[in-house]
Length: 279
Ligand SMILES: [Mg+2]
Image (tube, rainbow, N blue to C red):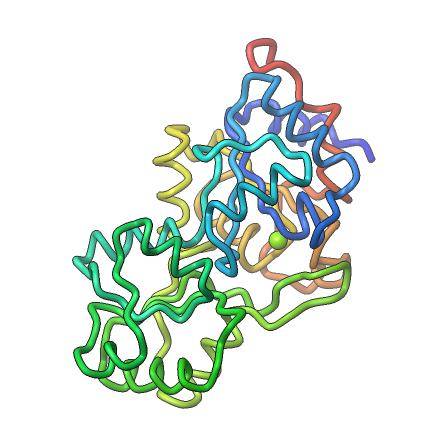
């Protein structure tokens, strides 16, 4: 697919490109055709390339391992996760170090490496933590649900890493994500959390701080309208929607979140990534 001259021109002025992962660069364990070449081309062009995932079903270390295993060039400094946004938010608000994390063992290890003390159900109920943090807990069980519910009722500060309702597994196949858990606790306890991942301002800050790039020269490339596209449009980044993941033409038509550039996949952007100093 060819971009219009206008879209190609907009893309050419972007100094930093940030890519979502699920549905944008890969689906489950399969890189999207042309995605690895695209990432390499961006880096070789002299631009900055970042990976941003809202998915907190794994630690930073696991995401880096996965990217590398799939063939994407990835260094620690290039990765941003919604757990990073949670860490920044919690520390800025003094909600540290004792937390009750609704997350799997991998995510608990991630928070421990950031200096947090992840309490057991018993510890959290005996002496309430500074915050309850809701992540993408793939090991969620009824004890955790009850503990989280009790802490929410006690008005403990309540933060969710992201609010995506579904996580794409394969094309047109999904599993329930944190947004679905939020609905469960809202129904039970009547409270919604502070959300810190895409599309929130906290996520925008993480990107601009890490990249040091003016917002208008950042392109955010993603497959989801209400996170990736919404954040880019509202913050003033260049928004690029790929149709390789969740969104189809019909959803796009119905949506209030309208991207600047729409392509079938990142592979369609490859020929437009020219060396940065020749722009
Ligand atoms: Mg995605």
